[in-house]
Length: 359
Length: 260
Image (cartoon, rainbow over all chains, first blue to last red; front, side, top):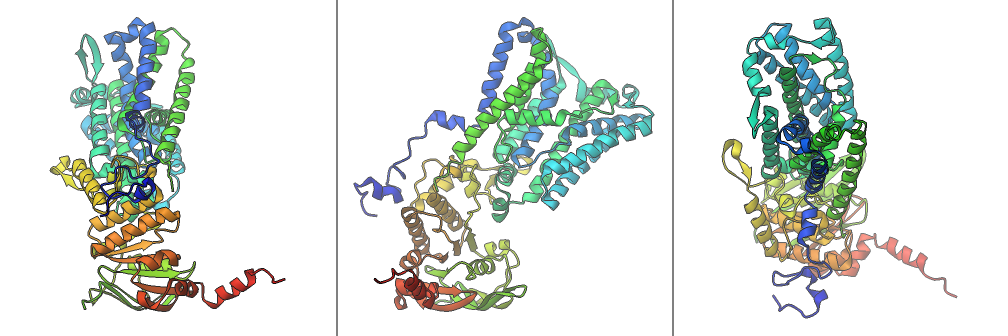
């Protein structure tokens, strides 16, 4: 190759010896690099929210207080992580909330009304969840319709089924009596035990949440499947053109979400030993809020599992922080909405930067 | 002389009652660039789809290494070493270059449930492969969306070459680019050619085709206007052929200022 020409413009084609491929580009600073991390906004937000409440409330920063606000964050977090994966893959699941109710009801009804061991009931519930997830995913990939509308349909259907079947089978709108079912003790140990850490009683769901987040994050960033999730959500046609099994990926994601709903539903059923027929309804948007606060783009292809967990953490801290400050609970939704707006605005900047194509 | 990598004999394709292609013959040889030229609607896209396995030809024969071949899917064509770089590039703008580079063919390490995407190897291979093509990327971690159009084309070409493409089909790689960027891409086309790849360059721009091409197939309304070796045809003749010769003369005549 000829020596590097003195004229900087002629070097634009760039041999390996050329220092800069494009003289118009400024160096990418470490700050700029950090900004493209999807979970950064949620991390800053979580620290800010924690500081805000911790400074003003002693209970909030005590070990017991922390255990208290970790609890709503944990069940929400498990769902938010699954929903975040699905959103990165380019889809929504509006039926995720009500599905946790469906699975919880299945556990209670199979165990109590059909007098089965609770583990059998939990197994049946898992099969139901997997089928529902498969159905959602199959319908979405098959029809090419927006998942928003398809899962809205399954959401409404499940809401009706939950009420109708519960009334039909139990005669009331609550399935009760789970505590006296065979196998309950071991199920309680897995799904609802408590342990004492630093003098505070922590529920086991918190550990499950941390584990789920870690596994999801690893799968997303360090496996082939994770790469396919990003690709399917980023540009499905392009992904399919290079041989990514986009359909299978989408169906697997819907099944992951329904499995998470099963886990959370089972946790609720075992904890409370009775399940209301409207359990989980209305939660689906909260999951999406947590995922978006965690850096997921609504358009797919970008986001993080850790971010979604941080979003759930913000939710838990705010939900309990507000009563700790003796504020009216009405402020909670105002606060959550403001966080969501801030997050969406921040995400928009990220996307602009990442997609700043200089064609 | 060795057998051509790929040969088309009297290939034709219909969409319903529309004859999209008819009687097309050409050859692609290792280390040569075959340019397919034609205006919009000439049948270039149909030809690509036949070559890359998206469609089957209705008539004629496709020969790979001198033997008849029949691709049922893009995957089969890819496995036979025919890689296509589409206009939309099949790249995900929000994903890092190295993730895009190995998308759909990720190297893995580990065993069973712990089998994971070998990120270190992928990043390393991406950087090495790109610099072998003379492409200097600053950081394999940057999203593809931050690359310029020419750089993206170059990454797509490097990717195809890395995955063992013997025949590289480029669909209008320069059409959306400025003069300088187009030059950059054509240089990588030449690089791929020099590494022994048989290139099929589809374009409607004879100014891009002529300098890099070895043979030229000119299409018009689904039919071949002939295949020419570089020595037999000048750039101006190519331009004239593409526009349908007489039509261009007519146009030039119409656009002339009325003589006063």
